[in-house]
Length: 410
Image 1 (cartoon, rainbow, N blue to C red):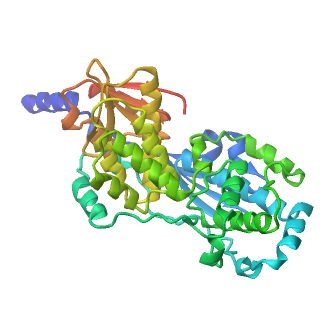
Image 2 (image 1 turned 90 degrees about the horizontal axis):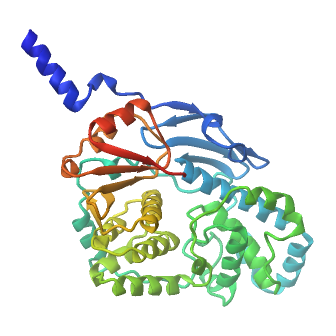
């Protein structure tokens, strides 16, 4: 019995205590969100918010439908879009919009009268989890790249990627409409390629009326939208490159392909990236821009992960990972980059592997233990770069497993 006790104590000291696993927390949204994200005239975040070990799940009730969000980053993005739709709604009540509508009457406006009006037509929802980014399982990247690049080099159209229902191809291709929509998105401070179908519909309505009516685009600066615009500026919208609004979709694709070629990426991998429909042009362009700002080996492996993204949401998360890597790289440049199965990381000059974790709240769960005890990086110095919070138990377990935890602002 005494021998068994010593063995048990030895195992506990090496691997932790299985009974120490934590149930993912349930938060009150007011505990973790600032007031301007909790409620506005156009939205309200439901109070109960459950965590999954990495990210917190929220539900937004809004004037434009119900949005289920996984992670604070997605919540911020959806609230920004809700505010943009509120502004567009106010614009449609303005005298300027009425003038544009009157002037555009000689154009085929009837084609846009039946644009999507379903108030529940928010972004397509898919299962969302970041566990596979940190877990021990492999990703099957090679086969995904081959599948995506196998004779499917993407033909990028000049028309908007997510057009609203009811607008015919001929109208979408009219010279100037795309530019008007880009200017509309720029004034609102939103992604013109957003996967939010309701937002796309609202932008199409307003952009078409200003364009067809021959009026300069005035959205965020409209007096009719002043109160909503002030609310919009309360949230800092981060991450969209300026040239996103200056280039059409074909030009973005050409620039991305050129950037990949300049850093030595194969045509097969470039084709796979451009063929992946889960990569919004904005996300693809931003991630490629981030990677080309890095120097050192290993970027191709990260691009393989980008090519293998199985949902737009996972692409958003990977973009957050790369943004966090970039922030660290600017302070202290990495000498190389790597993907340990699906774990994206940077290698510091002293040989430390830094793993970016743009998550909300880490609890000690079996899935998190997989990250802490990964054999493929167990023999090197490891550093977890954390933007959110971590439970006391999880922090202790990571440190016991040899990790250093560095917390940086979100």
